[in-house]
Image (cartoon, rainbow, N blue to C red; front, side, top):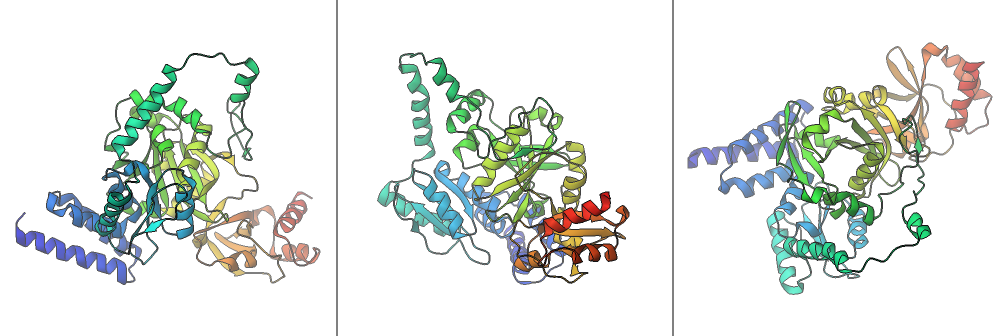
Length: 460
């Protein structure tokens, strides 16, 4: 590639990214622009382009770019993640006893690095800039404080810890103590249609570190994961996650360079046990929610051995963003591969084809905002709602209308999806019947009381 060709490509990249940042584009134009940028990335594999390519990746897929950049540094083991909110970043940094660093990237802002130089210390914060500028600041702090362990030092310490038990004399444990150590911990989730061999007591949070280390011991001797794998018709790039527990479990994030838009509605994960077996195992779809219960995006997990492990690994991944999962569903890869590329089809597949295997207490399935006619048909007073309050909807003539949910929708009009309860006109319901039921309830009306009253009327 000569100098003129390089100059023209750089000019085109500037034009594409400027359009993505400052113009109101249609979904087709956005997808076309991102596809063209990735085509350019594939052409420009010379070393001179690498820094420029990373900068453009930060524009179209900042999460993946942040992890890719952190993974290329000698301090990737102490990287705590990518965050768009200060509060979530602070909680993640201060939760770990060791020194660590993370990227802050609020929407429509630049980049910052936050660094904890020592346990209990206040975070040091870089100025706003790009990856290179922030990382140069991090290196200056490292020279001053020598606070971060390098990846090599992490490996040496891990090797020393693994070797330590062999030097200790064997002391038999009393039977009662041994039984207490390994007794199952009850969780708050409720099983929904698990097979008899599955344990109904799924953990509320990931298991203690001792269990992770024990489970990961055989994997540490296994062959390293490849950089790419074939995911149906797509080539998927594997990225190691920054959390030590995720590395021990051999949990990898998957990125589709030819379809970057998927990261806007779903995270892809692979549990790398035996690469050739993942297609023979069920795929799992989890619904990620924030601490208030608002829907964030789906999580698709491949290669998990069973639902219990799928819940644990999904929560492990979500916890780095201060998120949790509301439900876990199981589906075959062939069914999922036909629908996961688009948010609407993934919702439809998750709600109609996938089998529920676990859900949190008080769970209601989510429905995309785009599916709902949000204008309320019958006017009445509603009880005050929270983010976990479901909408009550009626499906009629291929439209989904709101019965109860005005107060819930008023909390935020920008959410991607809402929890819901769905009734069908084919069950003999009419708007006159619903209005009559509402008139017989105490005002303001609670959504669950109204739903139960309608169900009771249908059954009678």
